[in-house]
Amino acid sequence: FYPSMNQKYKEYLRLNKNILLAFAASITISAIAADYFSDQYDYLNTTLTLVVDYGVFFSTFGILFYIDNRRKYRTENGQLKKSLLKSDLVKIITSLGIGEVVYTIVRWVLQYYLLQIDYDAYLASIISQLISTVVYLIVLNLSVKITKLYKDE
Image (cartoon, rainbow, N blue to C red; front, side, top):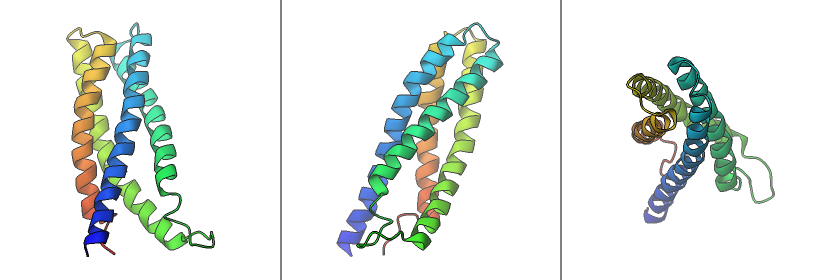
């Protein structure tokens, strides 16, 4: 009982570590992009920055998630555990999807608002992303728990 419970929490920690590292990469690049697009209309700056954010976040998260989980979906003789992979992919995509919808709305509205009240573009990007990330992590972890991605075996 205890070892599987311990493993479940390790999985949560790994997932959150990967998300935070991906956000660290995307927050840096997004701030640079927001500054680069600062001469654009606020709605365009916000939208382009969000596109850059997603590109950096998902590529970084995907690589880190693969590195941490590549052994989980292989048998001892190297064959792919297709049913486990399919089941977990549905759960993680569902959890990420719910979190991303909330994240996108909060981030876009907040960054746009901050630009409207004359924050520097890079600062509006950083503040909106930090607040949105906290909201995202709460929603994601609740979704992962609800979908039972890391259930006890």
